Length: 121
Image (tube, rainbow, N blue to C red):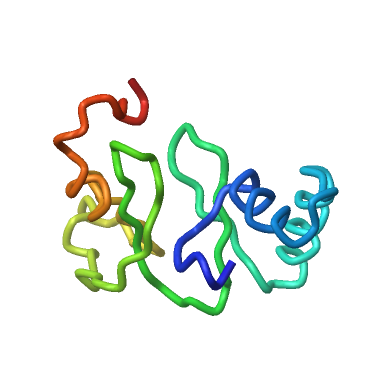
């Protein structure tokens, strides 16, 4: 997963790993993802209404950007910091996740290519 430099779906992991082990199955990928998650090596990245993606747990606190054109998810390190002031009076913020949506660099470059459907359409 480290060579992709972004959170990956199980199917994306299968496609990459199949280059080295062509007979690999999705069941084996899921078994290994569960084992890696149980030992704390990886963690899921859950976006509303989507299958989880996985990334190294060692990445620390960060947020995500999802391309609306290709559907890929990318990490970004910027964080506004303490968001306690956004919570209603008397509430305590324990954690936060920010997801930005737009188009990734690759899709912005190929935007003129109208044959490529937008993700989710």
